Length: 229
Image (cartoon, rainbow, N blue to C red):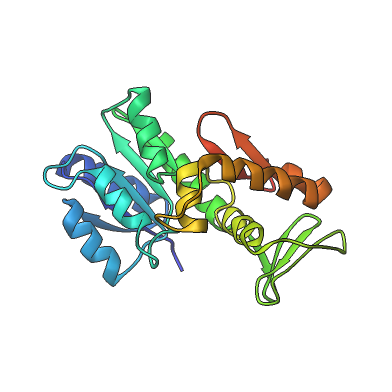
């Protein structure tokens, strides 16, 4: 089945340009011209990826991204933010809210398509066999709450297991500390960003040779590496 990309862009000329190039590349597209319409459409039919404009009237792209990440049915959809805002503070804000990539206008349609392809490859990067999630020597059995590295059982605490599972499920995508705190411990939990760093250190140590798969992205957070990385 062709992968489905939802374009959220209030400029109809730009949305048509994106849609034309995506469909030419073999994707199925849906288009929304406002954040509110996009969230309603995604609730009815989730996409494989969202291309999200930031500067929209009413509900801007940052708010839409926050709403997507706060919805259990949508939170794992990759989001590429598309905007004329190129300042570092805006890029960081978008990534902190859960965006996976950030493309600044004016953009090359070819570059955007390449980024879409790369992001969708990352989304499919987990190798699943008989219910197991595989990453080199690392094997996770979510149903049995069991992790092994090269056949050796690794004892993980509940939160360590949950943290590793989220990183593996979002392989190749940078996860900010704030987002990990929210998704692992929950909103309002009495924990701090240092908690994430401590758990990451413990995970790396326990995973041994596979610990290097958890990469620090300076200034942003952590990323579980793709096989090709």
